[in-house]
Length: 158
Image 1: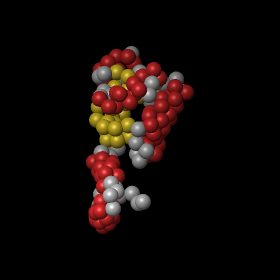
Image 2 (image 1 turned 120 degrees about the vertical axis):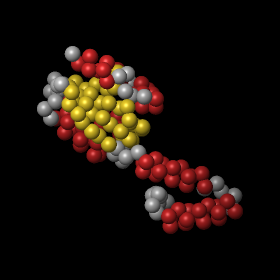
Image 3 (image 1 turned 120 degrees about the horizontal axis):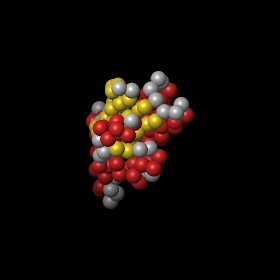
Image 4 (image 1 turned 60 degrees about the horizontal axis):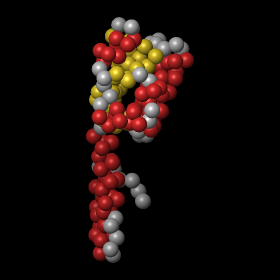
């Protein structure tokens, strides 16, 4: 089976034809195709974006989109560069992050470990809804300090 991309209409038509045949034979292949297509749409709609800004001696890293296995390579390189750079205080602002997978959690953890190695610190703020749920369920809140607002996180750096 080949993965579908939203721009590839010909394979989608082929799957639809196969679905019609499968339905005639009593198989339910249609739901599987929809889940692949919807997953492709999600990654198309929410690309990973990382922006940085400096406030006093804290580097704020604004992350938006999806931090998953697709984006973790490039995002990981960027976080490693930040952690190995001149800044010792880094704040990840996750207000616009829509999704994080285990690959994304590894990116964050790696950045935190690199900063700890040079006596720096990484904090997280503005994690909402499912992002906060993932951080709590995975035990991240016991490893990295998580704050409700950017202001609370800044106060904790002082």
